[in-house]
Amino acid sequence: MAYMTGLIESLAAVEDRVLVAAFSALALIFCTCAFRAVSRLYFHPLSKFPGPALAAMSGYYLAYYDIVKHGGIVEQLEKLHEEYGPVVRFGPDKLHFNELSAYEAIYRDIRFPKDGRFYDPFITTTASFGHTDIQAAKKRGNLIRPFFSRRSILQFENVIQDTVDRLIVSLAAKHTAKESKVNIYHALLSVTMEVVTSYCYGRSFQALEHPQYSLPVLLALKSSNFVIFVAQHFPFLQPLIFGLPAWIENLLPEEATAMKRLVEVLDEQVAGIVSDPGRVVAEHRTIFHHMLNFEGKEGKGRLGHGELRDEGVLLLAAGTDTTANTCTVATFHILSNPGIERRLRAELGEAWPDVGEGISLERLEKLPYLTAVIYEGLRLSHGIVSPLPRIVTEPTMISGFLVPENTVVSMAQPFVHLNPDIFPDPHRFDPERWLQEGSKELQNYIVAFSKGQRMCIGIKCVTRLSLFFYMAVWVAY
Image (cartoon, rainbow, N blue to C red; front, side, top):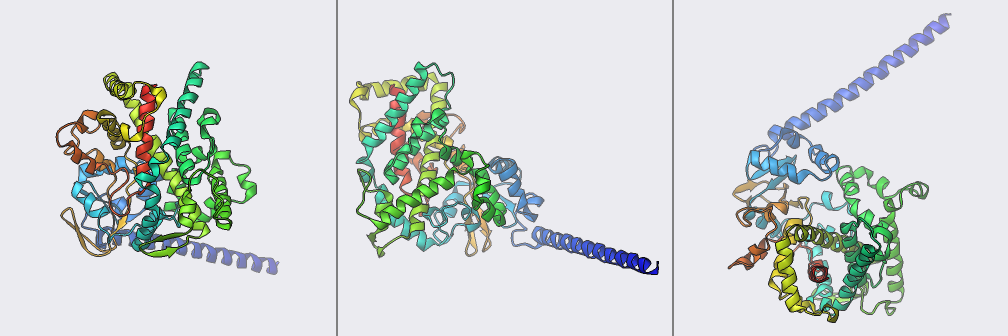
């Protein structure tokens, strides 16, 4: 009996010690978080900048809008700027600006590297898009740029035209079959994917032939933002997100693992080209052939297998989504405004009386109203909507504010495209604004591809040319 009593007392003592330890740990965590929050709010170098207290205390403020509100930080930033003025602190070390002078200062300053915390979760860790080292990014940009020169892409225009023709034939067939609804965004994703993969990879994924234009890779691209947001704010989850065992992947929907399969396909293609560089599977050199062995101002070089693959994935993601978004926005506004549609058809009808004969990209680019429609589509689709962060490496004046070293600064592209001082009545789709005297200067404020040395190179050209063919054929038919 005494033994049992002693055992019970010992267990009770152990339980008390466990409770004390647990309480102490929780108290320590609470005190640490409280100290950090107070320190960030009142003693941080950014404490003088206005913004919500929650945003100053924790990065989870941004995580909430990215993850729970599905990328709604831009809408929230618009409200914050209305309340706090031209600069807002929206994270412990983050400032967002809304004046045009700030955009130029942030994205044209070669001293400001990209913030790896934002770019690392993109699965293209060695691609040019994610390089945080400025010199390395410049070197990679100089390597890729010739592949996307205007001259190179104009030699490819017949493939772009054939791909857009396939879209028109496909849509006509669905109309004949009296299919009541077509997801035009998925259709445009499919056609832009075919253009990009044919040019960059030398192969077609037959996206336009897939039922309902729902190729799993495209659905994966469309839903990848959520995964990227989670990985950005919870980096410790990256190995789990991108390294699921096969037995779990088999339980998931096809689109959930489509990107991984795309990477595997590119791995195989890169391996074949690396082992036999003379084996060209397309009518032209692919991006992989171009980058495998190169010679430029920095000398000769050779990219590794992973670098080639990552660059390929990046080009697909960047070229497909931006072009499809722009085409979708333009299509909606053309169909919603009969006057715009009539004028566009009239211009195309005069320049292209026989659509069966075809028309060159150079001829299309000279059509002023078509050009104006495309610029409006680019302006209202924005490109990448999320603020693209840069790190201030030394105290710098931005838009009249002295920004401390190691501050992450950004300005989301919609704040340029919807600036009423540059674009009066900014939410209105108005091609006429591009036809006024002096309107050529407005092109400087189209930042769908960002600005400066880190802007999206190459894909700007292929996107622009694809847009011209898409808009022309869509309206002509």
